[in-house]
Image (tube, rainbow, N blue to C red):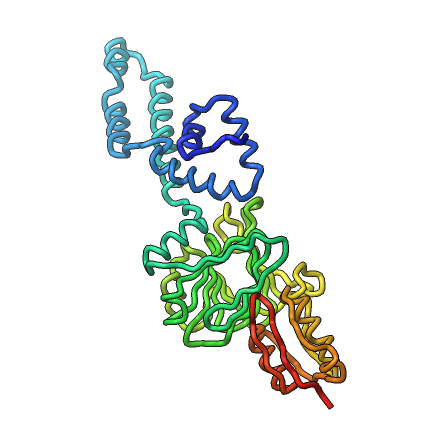
Amino acid sequence: MKPILTKKIIFDYFDGKTTSIQRKFIEEWLRDSENKELFFQYLDEWEHGHPQYIFNLDSGLKKVYQNIANPVNEIEELESSGKNISFYSYFQWVAVASIVLTFVWLGWLRLSRPSFVSYGQLVKNTKAQTGEIYEKENFTSKPILINLPDKSSVILQPRSKICFSPRQYNKTKREVILSGEAFFEVQKNSKRPFFVYANELITKVLGTSFSVKTQPKTSEIEVIVKTGKVAVFLQYDQDKNQKLESNTLNGFVLNPNEKVKINRNKYKIDNPVIVDQKLLDLPIQRFTFNFDDTPAIDVLKKLEEAYSINIVYNKEKLAHCKLTAHLSDEPLSQKLELICTALEASYQEIDNQIILKSNGCK
């Protein structure tokens, strides 16, 4: 039977109060990457209540000046004996001043370092502001398709989760929070920008296709652009509020086939690099949707593979149908509407399946 690791046990671990058995259990528990995020949340909370050193700058400097002005009767003794002040006394003063300056620098470094932002914190803040959230987690071993209220498509990878506020979504902006990896095809709407919050990174688009991936093991966040343009910036960006409120893309803008990584430990965005879409992991990233006199059945098979969905249709009726279409970063629903228009067909989404009805082609 596995032990239950409570917050108190984790806090005792930070305080050095756990037993060797408890430490072993914690080390085994941390082998699961999902537990690391919770571990760092607890660490951040514990550090706020247990600062490693509290330094009073005014008091420290006052003591240094007092020592310089009154060097512990050594000067009086040396003057009375007619001797020069020893180098050792000066060394003491310099040493004390160096220690004070070192602690001042460490304190400034600690206060100036931005705190890590977790998925849990973002969800908690959103719920507090809006009163409700919708969350979807992929517990399966395959990607799942999620259609957002504005008909944008999200292909959520295994062991990933996404959430948003149904009440606020698509009012003035479209905002989702991501943990893990997902591919987005965003419905174009320049008046309501689309934002993805992934830990410290904020990704902003007006309508395009791209992927975002958080990697707990390496503390990296990755963005890859398939089509259109994508702007990225950090939670502690000085111009964050301006970038959130603006209806334009500004700041660090990525172009098609560009990839950028954000190192959480370095608090900066790396320079973008060019990627070959054919070498990317996800089928949706590699595929193009350009069809020239292509059998309709082949088109539907490609959509099934790209979006990890099941499309139910009558193969006999579509056997002689062909399609010519050049699709790009439209969400799946829009692609299906265009295909159905060409085939004089209709579709419905029922139980995570696409049911396509057509009378066939002559």
